[in-house]
Image (tube, rainbow, N blue to C red; front, side, top):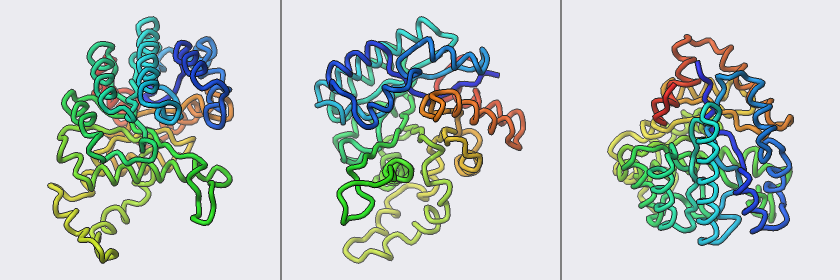
Length: 338
């Protein structure tokens, strides 16, 4: 069977050149990404991929940070176009290695984001679009972002949702920054979960039937906290006196837990067997897809791929389920041939 890695990251040379030309000196997470050879050097990427056999393939996507953090509306849209063009070129040149790519929607320019999503999907063949869990601190359920989700639902292409949070989001109100990179370790799973909740309770899935969202890192905190998400939120409103939050649940067309189970999740969990098992148990065997998050591991690429494959190979599941995780779910959701 194929092993289709649906969430790993790259900075193709044209995009990387344009990025450096715009930001100049790299700092923080940008510097970390640029320092990993596999991110920018194709030969190194191929060397790593070859470690896992000819059946291992990658669906390409740009890496953090969000384009909205790096540039204003016009430049972010420009970087988005360069990223899609350069990834599409790699897919055309190396189809056996890269069967598809994911465009990136710069939502600080909502109109341009819809236009770029249409161009990437309909002209370049993107299998979906990547967004981040907030747009410069703004939640995804704001009305201004609605046309993007409406378009993605109309074409049936999934949205990849990557967490975004930095050290400027403090752990305590009395402080000005997050310490010890807590903003990443615990902040990113929280970001994913909060964005999922905003999508559900704002009625986004009722407004845009057929919208498909792939959550990074095995669905954030949601599978681990099913009890709080389900029965816990059945009591929404009992802790709040200045608003009628019970009306929020009543306004949904289905029980809120069903919407959370409609999300998709990847297996990019940094080698956590239990995270992957919980994701499968919560979202179901048809809604979990193989992903490594390469190349952001201590070895600069191979480790997360190797460990994720090891976990999936050792899982106590049928070969049919294993095939779904590795290739069939990706093929069905993304329209790939295997």
